[in-house]
Length: 359
Image (cartoon, rainbow, N blue to C red):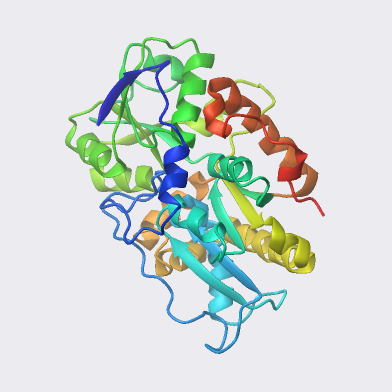
């Protein structure tokens, strides 16, 4: 655990790329992704698919897809279910992996023998990958907007806006990644320079919220959802940080997830990338419009701990499909905000237009 006051030193994102040199043997004890901090508390690492879903074991997949557990993978749930049932609309042969950590995805996208062709990653990871690999990956879509919430404990209803955080201590998951940058930006833009932030993992924060040991905290969905449900009324969602971001009317959107493709794969197989985007858009639309059924799929895939948690979390995930120029406009503005917080957030410099695949 580390206490800091904003402005504070950021952890260098080079750590992520050090981790990427070898695939981790196991997830963090809490099961939460290190960059997105999105898994629910006490969630065990997800079981990985055996064989190749949707294919006979002697077939080579057309697309090797990886998604991150937690909100980043929620929108892909219907696509993964279709792969399992051999019913993807574009009839591409998929192999998929549900990863526990962004560093696993980074490792699988890079190196001389990459394991993945397309992956859903935290948006700050996408830009860092592009900058660190000299354009080795491109962003093809946005799948998730904001998933962060300020929670209040003790059955209180005193916190209802960013202004209500003045002088308080806020526990937060996600140091050195999107959650920290988002919180720093919102505190700065609301003139809140007297807020103390304590970074810890989601499991510790959830336990302290439920016990009433801490007053307020920032957690992502579904960890926030699970804490609220487990508290039996003692913890509530006080501020949706996506709404707080939009209320600034800065013209930028809060973008938590980017879908990336290896540039070499996109150049060789543009038709497969286009087919994946159609499948992914259909999956997001299904999850948004069929919450009950989607919740069962999400839980069955191990993306969230249970269907009830998934059912409550899906509307809070702000799932959205953006591609082509809509994607460029949304995420480029977000990267400009991150750069204004700290250039290290985007790998030291804003990316050029080569980061976007818009065919």
